[in-house]
Image (cartoon, rainbow, N blue to C red):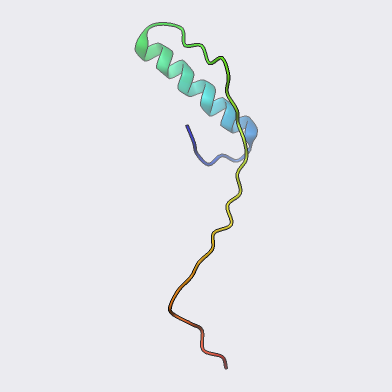
Length: 55
C-alpha cells in the first residue's frame, strides 16, 4: 500500500483500516506479521527542450 498522508500516525491508521476492511471482506483475521511505514521525499528532476530566454 502506498499513499500520501499528513503524518505517520495517519499512514498507520490507513494501514490498520485497510487490514480491518480486508478482514471484514474475507471473514477471518488477517495477521500482518511485519510492516514498515516510511517517509519518502522525492525531488523531481525536469529536463525540457524549452529554455527561458534571458532578459
